[in-house]
Length: 198
Image (cartoon, rainbow, N blue to C red; front, top):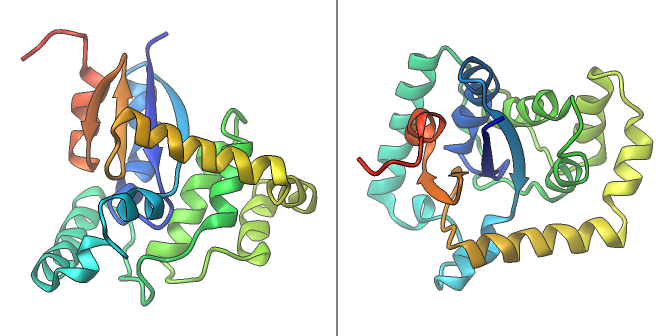
């Protein structure tokens, strides 16, 4: 079965509509999703940036927030501009990495995104992550403990290093058979990719 890798970050605004849309779109296209959480912070620092370019460039930031309003209205997903951006998301990212192959991972990722971009809540706490896991009927305490282990911490760092090696520079990024597609607006192109150049 054809597969798509989605490289994403819970603090990334454009990852939000992509994560909300991807499960249904991938199912319709008969494409298997491979979830690839990674940290944007180290990527940005490698460019000499201390934060998101949407923060440092005022005009770009103003455009992006209006763009998010339009996109979410178009897709029918809720939107509230977060009062903290980019919002720290280390713990949920570790859970997403640890459980990337679990059958419930899409539901978890969507719940964390909604907390950040629809409800404007902090997401980097055991309480926030635990609430999302509990809603899915899971053993939140056990999963969070595993996510906070040294092994999972190292694994997230390694996956972020792998993103750098692959040349990923932003989120969301989709990889299909090694072909890269960047941005929420390239989701459909990625799902339809058949290996032929346009």
